Amino acid sequence: MENAHERFGNLEFTKRVKDTTTRIRVYMDRLIAEPAKEDRGTSAAHLLSVLGSDAEIAALWAAVTERAYFQVQLPGRAAFAASLGPEAQCFRGSVIIQGRNRPVRHLVALSAELLKTRPGADREGKRTILYDNDPAFVLYRVSRRFGLPVVPEWASWFMRELERRKALQPLLGLGCSPVLVKGNKGRFLGWIGKALKERTISIPEDGNGTVSWKLPQSLRQAATSPTT
Image (tube, rainbow, N blue to C red; front, side, top):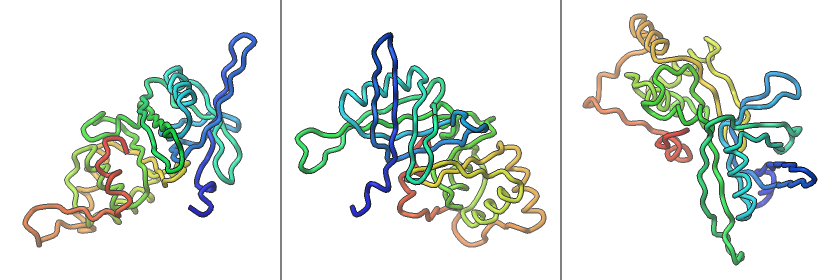
């Protein structure tokens, strides 16, 4: 766990009610967010994972449902404001740490847009937010969401197309390398059809018709998650 502190960020929430000010500051181990479009603007957060006490996690749960704004501090970056927006969802759990009498409480909050990227949801959507930029992972998740007829061998080609067409945007991440993929099912099917005609890609002749995805070990759980 050497330099573990460098892998954590901080999330701060301040609420003022009449003459009372409540300030909560917790450690954050995961983040996916879009940079603000304007200087000093608010970033759109899509995933927050934080650790804290019972009272802190309960207060942050309420803050998320109230569309509150948070101050986010990432290692080596200036602090910025972020919000998960309307209809965000939260999930709570506990983390047992050796040497502590009580477990640490864990909160994961997801934006409504991130929830729509699960397979079969919002088939007409034009934005897909992904946890990692690994080519095989990107193709797998996009194909699962839109029901695209693809094979793993096309992963490098698909990434080149995304980059060439400026349809891939890096996002702010902590503990992950998130990206935003722009495009809908019709657009991607058009790319596939054209590439097959031009023989830029081809359907493998060997095999028995089954498709096997060889994803990095660190991404296997994320690949089967309905939200990332």
